Every structure is written in structure tokens, then in C-alpha cells.
Length: 458
Image 1: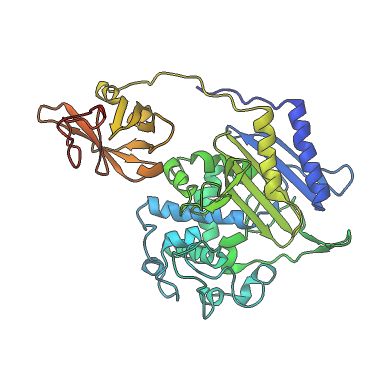
Image 2: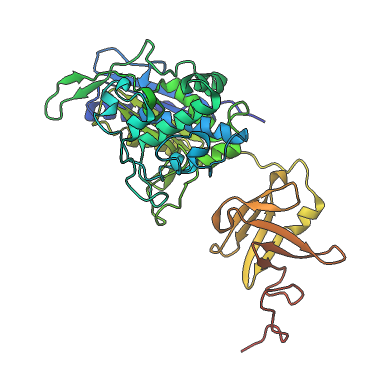
């Protein structure tokens, strides 16, 4: 069942406009456009401008910089879904002849390859791509800055390699592939490699005086997959919905979910930023957001999605620096989430349930640690500690009758239901951990055995 999209309350719309206006004024940007998405639908958009009585709307193009990386990453993930490559493959297997062929595709996607951030020579964002016609020109003689796989180090050159990989396997320019395989199916008619009117011009604003300087507009050539695209708030609203749910003609929900998971575990429980596969993650006020930020000379852009709140926000501006666009986008989400929190979906019973799986639910014990197992839709299982602390995970059902952990300690581990010779359930096995119906059940094969005297008073 689907529900109609509720229109925001006037007070909420006023608060959103106020945040946008403050961002434009304090950020000293010629213009600023913002949009909010809920349930996959654009529910609010507005703009502010230095020109009286003019508000750029959701259909005005801005350059989106590194948001382009997410689009390039989707093309690579499509190749993986078609079986044409694996993320663990070395680049050399599919794109021979570079000086960094040992790097894996996953390392390039997640910025853990150790490659340099930028190209040699003049600043690639403000100079013609014709200065760097070949991949060797963007890599240079010493392309590595860190040991491979050891740390996160943002690399624009890595995405030039990924664009070239797409071109090699598809046999055509990556921009043509992007239009056919992603933009057209998603209806992103105003997302292009070069600007189409109406579009904003890019400016630098002097740091100490209220004067502006036009920024040059260049075709970045082989570096285009790192930051070439132009788009609109309306188009990016559709893109945000795709990043949240996937699309049957573009990329599966499971693959999109993989993109937005941290490629490496963030540092500590209070982490503020991380990176997946072409997708940034950011924690703001306890809210985990995913999407991407972007910048090119004359432009700043941010798209954030809050899965928990079923909200997304887009902010686009035409200034080189100064406007805190990532913070503004996060604030737009916060304003709606706090003033008009998401209504939970109505509880509904499962459409069908295997009695044997229902019988598996309830308390289970890993040694003396109490857990509860619940049955979810599509034969999925969820294991959670009863006391609030301990190891838990969601598990996806597999065709062979096992389950695979999706998160937490058991991510990637296999859950099996062990049975006795007569078919009765003996215990659960999760990566060699035995879970029993009673704490240290003497009737189950607990590793190390159980004292035959059983539980005793002191």
C-alpha cells in the first residue's frame, strides 16, 4: 500500500527558506538552490539570489563536481552485476597498460588505492582536458602516495581510471554509457556533461571584499568521471531516491546498499565521516547521512540522504568557496525531521510464514548470553541480544537453506540450523558459534563441552 505525499506545513517551509536565505547571505554566494525529498518525491524546493525578485528554481543547472563520482561508480557496479568484473579484480585484468594495474577496482572506488589526489601539472579543474589526453598524463611518473589498501586518501585520478575502465568494457565513451544506462532510465533529462540553459554561471567571491570573479569553464577530458557533470535540484532529487532504494533497470537495491556501506570500518564509535563505493557517509547531530559533496571552480554542491528519516536534501550554489553547503543540506533534513517526523509504516502481518521458521523464533543462548531470534519478511532472520548489549545481526535467507549476516559482528558469516538424526532442531551455528535453547545446553555440541554436574549454587 502506498500513501499520498503529505505537503509540508507552512511553518516548516518558512524555516527551510530561512535556512537557505541565511546560507546565501552568510556564505556570500550569488545564488543558492535547495530541495527536500521524502518518500522518493520532491516535497519542497526554493532558491535565493543576489538579483532582486529572482529565485533560481529546481530546474536550473549547476555544476555538481564530485557528485559525478557516484554516477561513475554505478556504471562500475552494473558491470559487476553483469558478471563482467569483480570488485576484487586488479585493474590490469580489464584495463591493461597503466602503471597502476595492480590496484583493485574496489580500492579505486573507495579511495583506498593510495593514488595521488590530483593530476601532475596545472590544476586540472581550471585547465583544458586536452592538456592531459591520456591516462599516463593524469597519473604522472609517481602516481602513488600511500601503501595500497592501508588508508583512505581521496583520489580524483582513481575515478579517471574507473571511467576509462567503463569505456574499455563498453566500447564507447563513458558519458554515452551513462546517458543510456543510468540517466535515461531514471528520467534525469537535465543531467549533462556540459551546461544547457537555464544554467548558473560560476563565480569566485573575494574573501575580503564583496566583489566577484567569473571562473573558467573547461571540459576536463579523461578526468570527467571525477567531477564533470551538471545537474539540477529536481534531477538530483530523483538520484537521491535511487541511492535510497535502487532501480530495477539500473542497479539492484542490494548493490546500492553495498555502495553506501563504509568500505572500511570508521574510526571509533564517534566517527564523523567515512566512504563507501562512490558514496560519502557523514554523521551530523547523531544522524547518519549518505550521498556526496562536490566542488568545481565556481560551484559547490551537496546531496545527503537520511535513511532513518526517509528524507534527502540537495543544495547547489555557484561560488567556488565560502558557502557551507554540506551543513546547509544536513540542516534542511534536520528541520523537516524535527518538525514533521516520519510516520511509521502501519504494522502488518507477514503475507506468509513457514511454520518451521516460526518455531525457530524466540530465545537462544550463546553460552550464558541471552538473545532473541525474530522472523522477518522474505524468510529473513534477525538476532538481537536481550540485554541491550552483545552481538546481533540481520540475516538474509539463501537458496541453500542457510542465512548470511548483513551487519554487525556476523556480517558475511553463515547461520545454519543444525538438526539431530530425527530432524529435530539441535542448535544454531553462526561461524562456529553454537547457540542453544538453554544456557550451555548439555544436549547440544557446545565447544569444550559442558560440566556434567550442570549449573550449581556456589
